[in-house]
Amino acid sequence: MNLRLQFDTFHIDWDLVPEILREVGMGYHPAKTHEIAFNNSYAVVFVFDEENLIGFGRAISDGVCQAAIYDVAIRPAYQGKGIGKMVVRQLTERCSGCNFILYASPGKEPFYEKLRFRKMKTGMALFVDSEKKRERGFTE
Ligand SMILES: CC(C)(COP(=O)(O)OP(=O)(O)OC[C@H]1O[C@@H](n2cnc3c(N)ncnc32)[C@H](O)[C@@H]1OP(=O)(O)O)[C@@H](O)C(=O)NCCC(=O)NCCS
Image 1 (cartoon, rainbow, N blue to C red):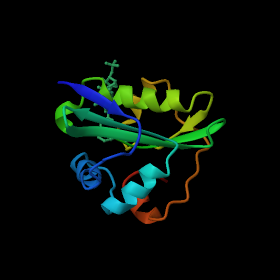
Image 2: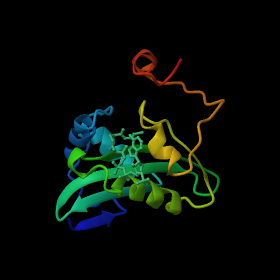
Image 3: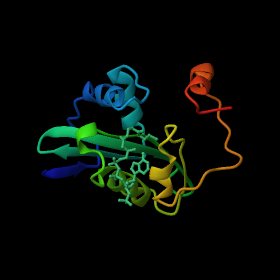
């Protein structure tokens, strides 16, 4: 493994983003939507092994108080090697001093608990696809 981190969106093959999200069982959109979402994010991390994109994550933020983490995904062959932890740490460092919120994929909460995230008692969400999100276990 020869890992390289990239903290901007230059020369990203956007078709790979929905492909990887689909591969790991997360929600995905047309490539252009991800391109806009990553470009409009406050902090982004892309992880490459040599020239191959193997994972990523992004945070939206005001840069001083509040931040939210989205789209943390590591290709299955690279999971369990500390790469996801590294992605989240890079995102939190890049929005230092901020509160962070996120909604974990159901079952992935322990990964974030290891990074000192705690379950929120009053978290509320207004999802575009609210019924689908409820079926997938994100809301009551
Ligand atoms: C969840 C995910 C990002 C974790 O990334 P990863 O590179 O596999 O995780 P790491 O190797 O960095 O693990 C860091 C720590 O969390 C633990 N961990 C990772 N996934 C876990 C899980 N599902 N349940 C419990 N613990 C987990 C690891 O054992 C490790 O513990 P350690 O620090 O004591 O050794 C990755 O598995 C993934 O992409 N999964 C599919 C997509 C997804 O669900 N993304 C999260 C969206 S909220």
